Amino acid sequence: MEKEKETPPKKKQLSSRTIFYIIILCLMILIPTGVYVFDLIKISNLKDKHKTELAEVRAQAGTTVKSITQKNLESLTRVFSWAVRSEFLHENIGQVNSYMNELVKTADLQDISIIKTDGIVVLSTNKKFEGNVYAGPVASQLATVNEVMTQTGKDAVLICICPIMGLDKRLGTIVVTYQPTVYTFGNTE
Image (cartoon, rainbow, N blue to C red; front, side, top):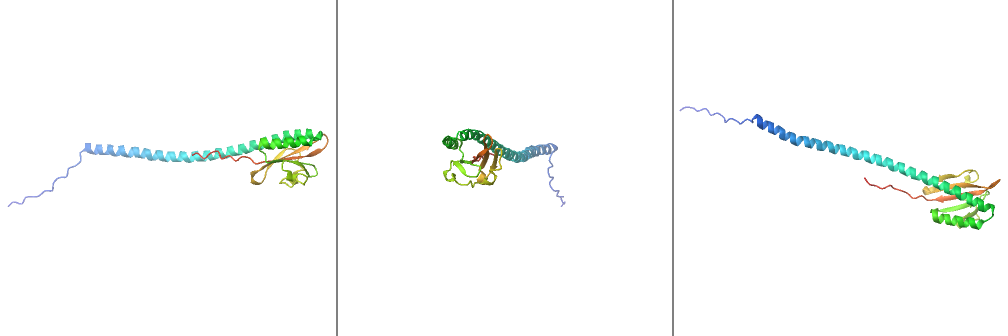
């Protein structure tokens, strides 16, 4: 008996054409996946950049609104002081009181006080101040203020101080308090 040599069956080798197709198939999967991942990273970076820029724009807008509000309040107080000066020189206190009440209503101001040079409140839209020494947050500065100025008080209240000048002397000081509206400028992302 002859011993037959058992030869292991030959493994089929992949043809070069099959290898080529496998490589093409892998590339067709890997390239779009790579592009997709790259684009996801790019989009994430753009979102972060957008959030940063949006925060900067919101901060700048808030600063601009505050500045404009302050300038408008100063202009309003300056013009109002001219009307008060005119009526004080004619000793028409009732008209000044009407002006003050109407201005508080129409301009959404908290209150207006007119203080004489000795520190006593002559007129105020808050009647509990009248006849008393002004004890507001800017009381120590009333005598030294020679031009319109605005300060930020407690709870972000704007306090505008304006001297009332007569022909040859100071007649008093106007103090206007205003609670500005807080703008959030949306939270869209």
